[in-house]
Length: 75
Image 1 (tube, rainbow, N blue to C red):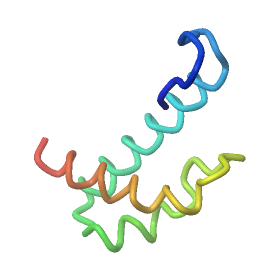
Image 2: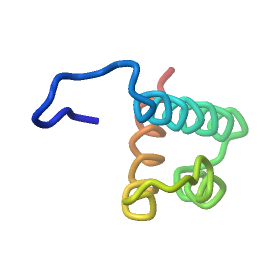
Image 3: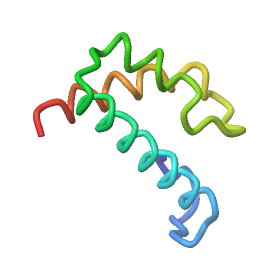
């Protein structure tokens, strides 16, 4: 989330929702890696993980899974 034309308000509800989504994504990807799933299987498994009313969820979620996987697989 990148602020636009106003100061960042860390108490804004949207920050809490974003943080919760990212934590859910991280935990789901870590679990998939621990069970030795590949990226393709992880994307399929986590397709609806964290689904909310995000405007671009369908466009971005798969890419978020792949990005998280490539970062976390080396932990």
